[in-house]
Image (cartoon, rainbow, N blue to C red; front, top):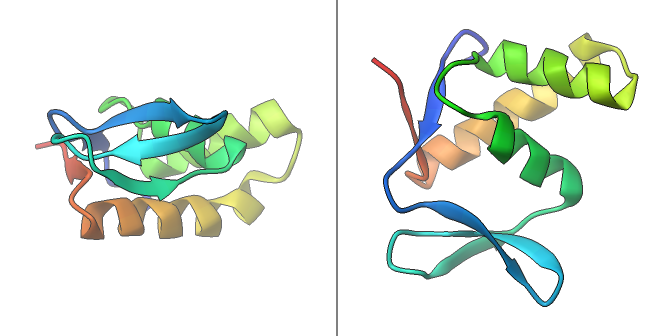
Amino acid sequence: MLDSVLVPVRGAELSDAAGQPVLLEADGVVVRGLNATAARVWRLLDGQRSVRDVAHALAAELGVDPMVLEVDVAGFAAELLRLRLVSERE
């Protein structure tokens, strides 16, 4: 998972509902609310960076050990794949 490069599927987007970041499916259905860190991970999943690169970029922003974030970011990425909100770039 850490070497996977993920990209949001067409129509899936991050939005705001009453000040809370939420992920929307293409038809506008709210899939889940996000905290600020998860919203940042979503923004970093740009189809260019691997999941590992996203974890390291976030770690640099937060000033924490990237190895600590790799597990959490990989878990979130796997959940996004399960929900079909992202796909692996080919």
